[in-house]
Image 1 (cartoon, rainbow, N blue to C red):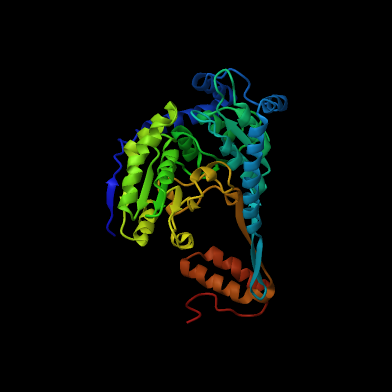
Image 2: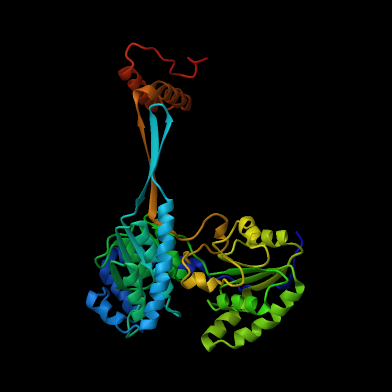
Length: 437
């Protein structure tokens, strides 16, 4: 495959991960040992938060009353879409039973975890949609208890729209607690939360590292890095739309890559010329973030054919993959590695980020090669069962005994032997590989 670059990324040196790991590990150890007092100290020191950690129903209702009616309508619209999609996913997951042989039945059950913890990021942007994506999906999966944490703003707490959204989505308990201390509270069962079976939701590098270090003790949705987005566009795509779709995702911040893959040099050059104009029209905070991301991590790749474009996209395995090219069914069937796929010029990644329905918690940093995003499946344990009747016992027990003895596992073999003796007294069986020669 031959590709050339109109613009190539020039990433900065990576952050010192060892320092983040050491800091997060120390915090988790301290909070586990010190409990709520240690978590409160970090809330004061890192977030400047002196208020209560647990939100009361009265506080949630008072905050919700401050949310403008139109914004409530918009949040409810998004919630309905996200819930409907998650419920459809859940309906596609079924308990199964099969008779493998006469008298040998096996099956699977899909059991929701008992408790989930949802991290809802705050920080630079108020991520209302993240509350919908995590809490709503857990609820649709049938999780028994869903706790949610979000970093409070100094002197304010969790913004009213965030509180309204978390309660609408179905959070049982909400904590004004961010960062590592928020993750720890859910994992260790602090402030009235049950210990979480799974932790979900995006966050900064410290939140991601806390989840990574806790994985094994608890489940996690994924180890998330900076968000990324790739646009595939052919010669007929609108350069204005393509440029804005790249800039819109670049505003996540200077560590968020955006890529354009096209078979048209003319389109690539038009987008390259348009992006600085789009960036310069943004408000200062957004402008600085988008400019830094595009300068360091933006790429425009020129391919000869649509197959080369698809192959390049599969190699990158982006979190968001947006196709603005002819023959959308071909692309939908051909593309294989992405977190979520956005088809057509009328679609945009922002729809998926906020309101269209499929989840926006997605694999980053190439992880879409081997996993999908957050869904009801993450909250379900697929467990299996089996039951044996005497009519299946002869073949099953003799095969088990012979395989076990070949492996050298005599104890395993004898658990099969004893059942043959019990259910078929007086019969003789060849129970070792040598006897069966």
